[in-house]
Image (cartoon, rainbow, N blue to C red; front, side, top):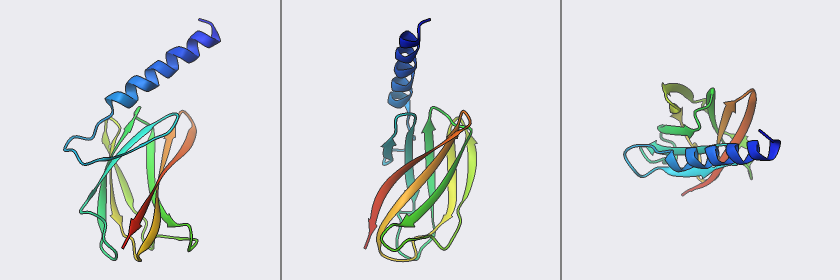
Length: 127
């Protein structure tokens, strides 16, 4: 197979994985990168000073996922380090997250696959 044909085949596989990625139950946020699709849903909805968890689905299924959050304008992160547990099939649960102050946060997913780590992020504003 030529290199060009291989690239087309890989792109088609990634596109199919992106389309098929889902997190049952609805209401999930979706972030896409060139290599992965990350779906997540917070339970309960994040509120300042209250712990919450994330249900996460990553497609294609990676070797592992880490979750963190920072406040870029303040140059600091959360006061708590979440625990991420693999649920199988590209599904994860992150517990112990807390946004300790109002403002703009950046929720960051570090997706590890094929010996590489990719950062996928989304900005959130808490009042």
